[in-house]
Amino acid sequence: STPLYSSAASDVYKRQGISVIDGNLNLVAWNKQYLDIFNYPPGFIYIGCHVSNVIRFNLSNQKRYIHDIDAQVQKRLQFIRAGSKHKSERKLSNGKIINIEGNPIPGGGFVMIFSDITEYRRAEKYLKEENTDLESRVLSRTKELEQANLELEKANQDLANAQLKAEQAHLKKSQYLRACSHDLLQPINAARLFTASILSLIHISEPTRRYA
Image (cartoon, rainbow, N blue to C red; front, side, top):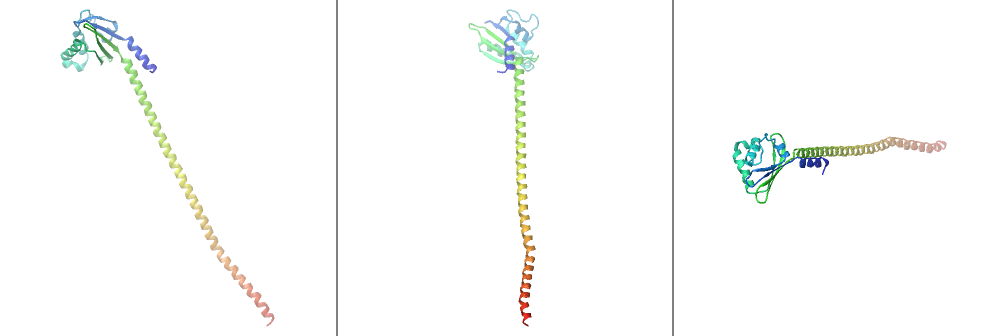
């Protein structure tokens, strides 16, 4: 586990509140952390205090239970009477997040453990946000790299097309020069042939003039 989680978990154990209820559903023991977590009024908690009063006080600090608080108190008393082991999480009006565990005692009664997990949940939320942020940055970077690869691929394709066009232009230029050269040499060759023909006629006519 991460140091942040370990520190938060260690904090949870240091701030655990404990209360003990006997078979008649009366409080018989508790620790200071239990009182600190729920911030009970002075003198509210005492040996022999019926647990229904405690449950009612705790629920009255939560708006969602105000409209049917009696039913909610009875529901929780039934859990305790049935000796049902239970676990839940509750957010108090002061912002604290409390993990609640109820463990039955053989022969009747209950041990209640209240853990202030506010810092633990805060650390959990922070790490989730960090992971989300990291995932977002990785995703963003991946998209940037993909875009860069697409642009590089396009640039390479453009370069290949430019090279192909240059080669085609060079080929056309060579073909054009060859055609021009042929067109230019044709009259020259014709002139050469004509000159050769004239010269051959001259060579033939000279002997003829001598014998005339």
